[in-house]
Length: 219
Image (cartoon, rainbow, N blue to C red; front, top):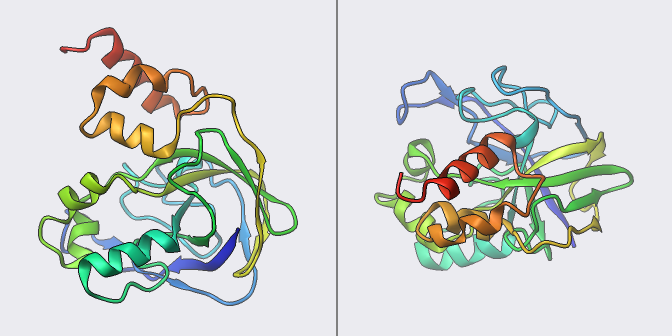
């Protein structure tokens, strides 16, 4: 299990959403990149030095500090889409190989490189910027059906990471709430929602929404 690449965004205009710019255009960089907890959402800060988000209402902050996507899933999308997909093209900061990103449990911790520790927090939700960036009509529905969203991670121990660094699972909670289960619970399989309550490392806003929906399943 390792990082194939560490990807940093290049700001570009965002004609697909009512904001000025987007950082979805992420590309591999050479050398070590500093990783640290960015603080609360709302500033545009993320976990990797040199990167940022522009839709500060929906992205960034401690619970979405780093976004990881598996090269294996990108390869399957390549076949489906009939086009080459480079590392970082889904807006991921980390392109991994050998890591079961969507099977990772909420609260699972990864040591990356010598000492950086990241914690799995929640799945990615597709948006209009993502669809527009890939220039694929109906992409949001297609991506949602596949239920391989990739994982957002918190920074537990800061450090530096580089392409080629090993990824080691150093803690795995004893519940069965994975990234894929959370995504499916919110998008098409609401019967899974009660299972999510076992994952105490879910971001509080997501956990609160789960509690409301479980308490009022028809509301």
